[in-house]
Each structure stands twice: as C-alpha cells, then as structure tokens.
Picture 1 (cartoon, rainbow, N blue to C red):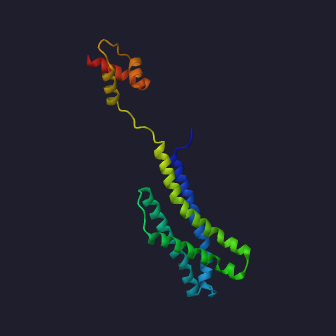
Picture 2: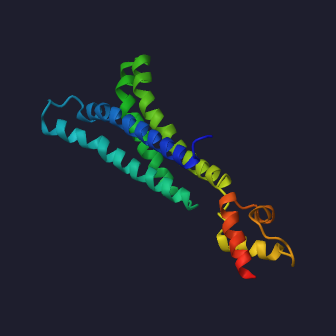
Picture 3: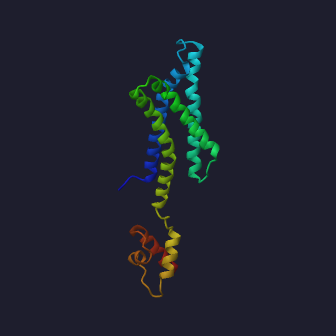
Length: 192
C-alpha cells in the first residue's frame, strides 16, 4: 500500500522549503561580500552588509509562503506580488554572481549560480507541487463512511414481509461489514 498522499505532500513541502532555506543561507555570504565591497572586517560597513541578504530573503520567503497558502484556496495574487518575487530572486542571483562574472571565471559563475537558481526553480515548483498533491489527495479521498442509521435505513427498505433477517442477509442487502451486520440484524429483529 502506498503512503497517504497527505503525508507525501508534507514531506515534499518540507524538503522544498529546506532546500530553499539552504540555498538562501549559501547566498548570504556571497551577498555580504558583494555588499561589503572590500570594507574592513568588523567595520560598520562590513556589519551592515550582512543585513542585505536577510532583507531580500525574508521578503522572498514571505511572498512564497503567502503564495502557497493562497494557492491552496484558489486565490490568485496580483502582478505586484509576482514582480516582487521575481525582483527578489533576480537581486539574489545578480548579487551572488556579480564577482564571478567580473572575474571571468566560468567555474565561479556556475558555483554561484546553482544555489540561487535552485531557489528560483523551487520557489516556482513548491506551490504547484503542493497544489497538485492536494488535487491528487482529493481524487483518491476515501468515500465518506456510512453510518449505522444509514445502513439500518437501507436494510429496512430492502426488507420484505416474511423475510428472515440474519447477519448474512443484512450484509447482502447493505454491503456492511461482518461485525456491523449482527448489530443491524438485532436492531431490525427488534423492530418487529
């Protein structure tokens, strides 16, 4: 038997968010070096440079989380939200790769491109994955349970005068379980 889709959805959600957070953590030092622009270590400019990446990343994370929740409820967000998401993703990419492009090193460009690009792709995929897994869960949702009263009503309707009510007969006309059929048969026989 496969894992319940809801459980898989939670695992996928957590793994995507972990990847996004790790990618943003990786970018933080690159953005700090970009923003510090050679400022002396421990100087005010050096400390202030540490604020740039969290500022951009926190806005991005807020947008991604809001996008994920609103998508679950079928609410479309406006153009400003999409623009803010792509601006923060783009800013992170540019600040991460700037020095690699300036140095003309293809290896450094690749190294500094992978984490922001993973964040870009995961940011787009996480909402759709969660939405599609939710749709899949709804498609295979178990049928609602039939109550005792509903089974009893079906059995009463199927009962003809003179019919011998037994647990086997109850199972045949209602499709209920073996354990429930004796209780239903007793209730039906108590009607007489």
